[in-house]
Image (cartoon, rainbow, N blue to C red):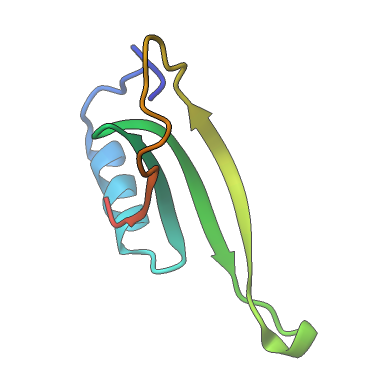
Length: 84
């Protein structure tokens, strides 16, 4: 979603990607309109020993694409939890 920003394939990149995918506390939420991804956000769940041991989540790296042209906003906005 960052346009031309693409990292070259490397051992470090693949290793980090695999580590992120395996982390059960790291999630991506994706918004779709008419079958196209228009936004995404990272959700990182953090476990804590206070507040009745209830975890909390950090929302970060919110990215949204500008939508041009006619879009049916009466249809459903699909938001789903992605496992990559």
